[in-house]
Every structure is written in C-alpha cells, then in structure tokens.
Image (cartoon, rainbow, N blue to C red):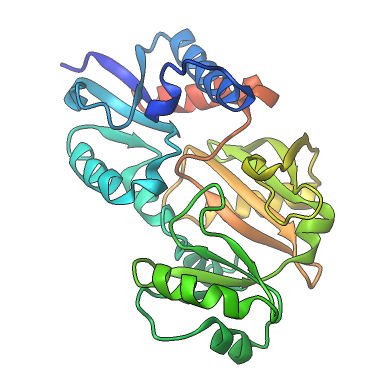
Length: 299
C-alpha cells in the first residue's frame, strides 16, 4: 500500500538549510508552492533529498523532480540511484522522458522533427580531435563549449582564436571522461537575453527573460545573471509549444529556453524536462496547474 502520493525531490543542501540566502530562499519557496498546490488537491506529499538513504521508495506512488541540482556533479551516483529507484516508484516527468532529456543529444531528435535549434557539433568522449580542428572545420570563430550532461553552466567556456590554445589541455582532459557539444556563439543572447517559456500539461503558463551580467555571456544567476518577467509574443509561444509536442511522449512540465539566433530566427537553446527552475514564484497559478495535471495520474 502506497503511503505517500508524491515525493518532491530536492538535494540535501536544500532540505533544511541552516543559513537562508536569496538563492535557497527561492528554492524553498518554489518547492513549497508545488507542495501546497498538491496538498490542496488532497494528495499526501513529502519533500526529500533524492539521495535520502532512509526512505523506502516503494511507499510513494510518484517522485517529482524539482530542485535536484547536484545531480550533474554526482552523475555516476545519481545514475545508479535513478536506475534502482525507477524500479520502485514512478517519476515525474517520466523515466523515459528524463533518460532522453538528461543528455543534450536530444537536440538531434528535435532537429529531425523540424524544430530549429542552435547549430551543434557533438564531440563524443575520447574523440581524437582538437578545438582548433573543430573551429577550422566549421569556420567558427567564437563558440561556446559545454558538456552534454550539465547544469548551472558547469564546464561551459566561451572560445575564440585567442584563447583556444589555453583551453586545449583542459578540453582533452575533460573529453576523456565525457562528451561535449560545441555551438557558435550567439550574439543576441548577450544583447537581448534568453527566453524561458514554461509549458504545463502542454499549455503555456508564463515566461521570463534571463540576461547575463555585463561582461559575461552566461545568463544563469549563479554567475550574476538577472531574471525578468516577460510577456512572449504569439510566435514565441507557438514555437515553444511545437518544441514540446516534438517529444516522443507528452511531458507534464517543460521549460523551453529559446533565443533569436545570429540569422534572426527563433532557436531552441535547451528543452528542459528534468529538473528545471520553473519560476512558480512569478506565477503561483502555474503550480496549481501542475498539481492538477499530476492529480490526473491518480484518476
């Protein structure tokens, strides 16, 4: 008999933080909005770190990924837990969706379905090629290099002809352990920001614009980026919803990160279906919509 309807998954840093700062305050607030929304629908909810070794995962019907933001730093450990726990309970989004989305090779699948994405070259682990060779081969001068499994701009570097030689040894060391992706640097992200549109149960709910701090290219608040409420155009909403529909199965929640590329076209930066920040604090009704979609799973 299942005792818990939904476990909201976080990581151990955010279970009971001793010191509250702006960052973990937002984490706690986001998770609370989701928990309150689920409990209003008479669902029994618990919030736990994903690696809580004391919890019996067979006692919950669903585990909802929210703020598990240490997984990419502990990926081997997380993968083992994910494989084992997936046999004991159900994940939201589904295990199938997460396995597809956790590795950014999914961009290739989106492109095959006609969704315009940022041009991307994938460099598989231990591939014998240099950054200089890649830049010459594709005639790219400014690029961004990052791992295919990552978050919070981990090992993300802006490259140009002047600094390639500096990054070559690091790239060789990192690429021996994991695959990477190389993309042409997008000027409009720095000039105009990156958009994040939230899609819940297939429908747009709200959006934000993320802007990098002056002198940086990373829009994440970890690096001084700022977040602003944004009202997207009809075209931007349609583009986001089309991207989500291109998934092999329907996700309950999604965040579509997009921008206007160097050619003036809307393009996908990332399609986040695993543990994205969804800015429910900007639109609490979206948390209610998520809860309703989850409650349908019990019907």
